[in-house]
Amino acid sequence: MSTYILGIDLGTTSIKVVLLESGTRDVVASYSMQTSSDIVDSSGIKANEQDTGRIIDTLNQCIQKLPADKLKNVTRIGLSGQMHGVLFWKARSGCDWSRRNCFIAKDTSQLITWQDRRSDNDFISTLPKPNSHLTLATGFGCVTIFWLLRHRPKFLEEFTSAGTIQDYVVSMLCGLERCVMTPQNAGSWGYFNTSTNQWNLEILEAAGFPTHLLPQCIPSGALAGHTCMDWHGISVGTPVGAALGDFQCSVYSCMNTSTDAVLNISTSAQLSYAMPLGFTPPSSTQSSSPISYVPYFDSSYLAVAASLNGGNIVALFVDMLMKWMSELGAEIPKSSLYEKLIGCALTQDTSDLTVLPTVLGERHSPLCLGQVTHISPSNLSLGHVTRALCHGIISNLTSMMPVAYLHQAGVTRVVGSGTALARNQVLRQEVERAFSQMTIEYGQNADSAVGVAMVLCDRL
Image 1 (cartoon, one colour):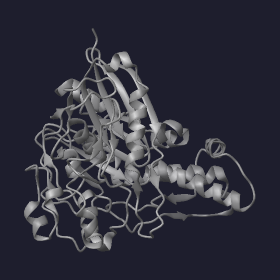
Image 2: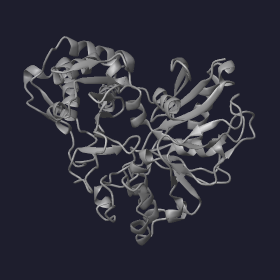
Image 3: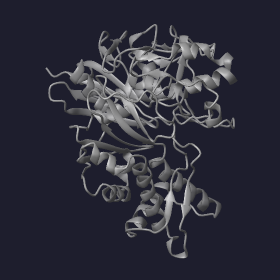
Image 4: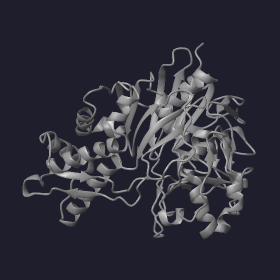
């Protein structure tokens, strides 16, 4: 009888679930669904929050779409999800299991996502310096908690636990009294030393930080516990892996050798490769460095250039055009507009228009906003602008991690993945120009849900 591993990825905009056959590692079933959980910010503080209840409801709907006969034979559950963000809950009442075979969110905050920008650079400059090679940035969990401590201290008093959205789901599935977190997620929060695998407790306590909210750290790839209830036909007592970062899991799903680099362009964009075993990151990294070293597995690290500006910039461009047309009294479906833009750009092989697409800034340079230069009467067509925008997205990423760095690291193949790259032929053309001296592989798409299931297949 075949057995299966359930892989779950709680992404920024959607949730994906897969069933991986334990013996063959083949994906035998999958389903994904948009969460539509964004909460409109009317506060003026640049908040970015999502409805926790809607996220959990979407998760339940996704699991229900998988074959019931296979769910009965699930032997392990793995979760990954959006990193940096923070969710608060009450440990003993964080969910309601009264509905048959599933839980719903209860006594939780909304999810404050990695895109939250209320703690700006000026605010971060007032925080104590962390004992970590990873620098602080807006949207990081500990930074957000510091902001809440200063501006909404009563809010924090309502809760006993904090974690990422994937940590929360693991805690609810296992009925944990205290949240557990892997170094992959802890490193994304700030104030965590990946060499010692410890929070900077002395630094945080001296600053009045509510350290009782911090999760207990356990190794990436370790077991968090077992399901405390039957869940959509999956038996009580099923092992559940500690939640992992979606970025690391996406890399794990498609990085076959140490000579691979993974380029992922979805909402944001990342370019990464594996550091040699035994590599130790510098004790501190300058905040202006665009390359960071994030924890992977077995005390290893990935070198990563993580851009905040990826497919979301194309989406912003489309939304801008939609708004302009609406103001002019013209209407066109968004999907049709997107297809027309790509079609126009495909007829324009290059453009002398220059677009720096850092509309959202970058973590290493938060004040560097977007620019359009070399404008002339001959390069203002939609084809020119769209081509220049796509070229700018790739150029921005390779300016953060130059191709020469990859050559020096022995990289010979770039695995391209992500929804934006899959949908956008113009982006793929620009990738092929940028990495013309390397093999480009698109067939093995990075997939966090598949990756986390593979981790459990290989390590538990």
